[in-house]
Image (cartoon, rainbow, N blue to C red; front, side, top):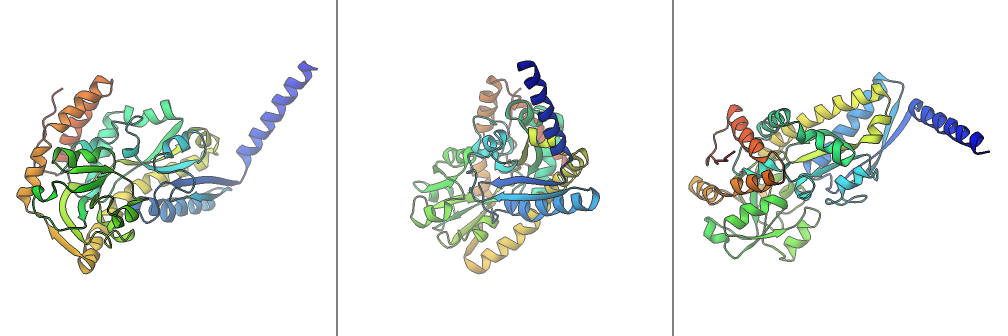
Length: 354
């Protein structure tokens, strides 16, 4: 009986696999811990999903539909990497800031604060570095059973607060929120850092858990953070490409070949959209905030002084990550060079020994 059942079971599995590969109606679970009010999550919904469904329908015999899980309804901001790995969702958008133990090097632009505020320039710099360091892409497949579809740029980071300030000394003793590595921008500057996420930002600002946030202007507008934080200071910490869109490797491999090709095409377009849309949105969102609250531009000397206070931190990060076998010194030096090659001049040119 065992000899008969085993081949029969194998035949059934093969038949089911063939049926799945030939299926014309494909449903994918997609989500993020962030709400669509955050630009990249909104673009996942309005651009990535829409374009993928449209192009697949136009160019193949298949259809694509989505089960959505935004705003942490399926996975929280800290659970996206594992959620995609385990197949809880098929496609996930995440900030690498919440994966300090799994992806400590992928927040490399954050280790070099006061970089470009241009999201397109930030994205191009990241693309150049990823191209030269294959590990940054391959680690997703090798360790986490997923495919990196897109790198995601953010709008430029500034500082929103519930109080006015002009100098770094004005922030001493104040609690300011951030996420992951950008908390070091605060700590090294002598400011009290508080780990948080955008999912809880409004309530925590409203209840004085902290008095400010390192944040791009789109979130200050879309999530109404301007209500508990009526002061927004343009200090220019930089635009960071430290989010990503990934897909479960098994799900990716099960897709029909023509669908996979279109998926990668749309993912590449979505990646560029995160740069261009954030760039366009930045000026509009700052203008919106100027009509709602007090928006000030910091004295360049204050920005320079804050950057100098962080001068030793990139080297410290490089040394720690190098010791773990990661190419951190290489990546940081490539980033410094790539930013300059893409037209950026660093206010503080960090030195990373290799």
